[in-house]
Image (cartoon, rainbow, N blue to C red; front, side, top):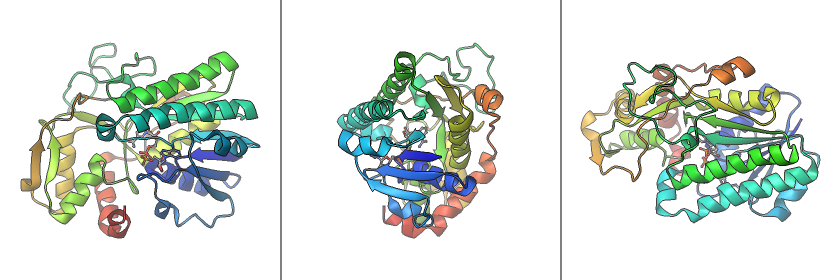
Length: 331
Ligand code: NAD
């Protein structure tokens, strides 16, 4: 199976490329990545010499780069994106460019070349936010205001990041409806694990805790995220690629709702640093209060369920950053 992975030098992309090569003998992967600040080939050194793997340094918005890569490709796994909400609040133009126009360029080229399947890797943030609900009791009544996001939840993105991801999702689904293209959309909750850029919550807090510098926590620290281990997410994308139905959306979650403050305290515990390092800072603009995922469709139709237990996997992740200081200090 010949795959074009976009954004394969990023956090999830590099884990996905490794997962696919390690799991399937018969895959050949081309990784197309522009190597923005978020892309890092040092995340792929263990597989870079695999004869089934090739890297192309290029921009998904450049049709002349993208078109030839589609020839003979069985499926596209589209992960390349501008992915950091805070950056989208400061400057949204790169988000519109990559997440909307880049997705369009890929879809048009895939359609022209007759690519077999297009997997649009997206986020639960396209659904907007849920009202706060105690993470100790994470199962509000189905249908209630506080219930988890399902694939039928109305899209209501609230940041330029999530709005541009929603636009990419809708464009991809429109190619299915209009052109009959085989498109699958996946939406996962917040990922954690090795090779994540230290601008994101967990590696940011871990690296600050290791260095003994303050840990900036937005607002009251009670915003809730569901955390999925990146390896579970990669298994989900792989399952959607192989078993997903055309035109269908699949949610992936880790069954691990935590307040940011719970996550930060757990990190400090794992590093062995003092809670005095916590510093509350002014809240992010438009900060979504809670995300929570109902992944029943992925359980039923893909036979997928998350394997990682957050309370055990978080200290493992912390250990990785402790041991890989060379990787993140160079980012
Ligand atoms: P990331 O920021 O770590 O990596 C993005 C990659 O895309 C980088 O390697 C970057 O160089 C590349 N890229 C950016 N613009 C490009 C362009 N114009 N052309 C080619 N390459 C370009 O992101 P991530 O956290 O690995 O997320 C991957 C995907 O998964 C994104 O689409 C994101 O929306 C989605 N997602 C992420 C999370 C999460 O928690 N990280 C959760 C759900 C969904």
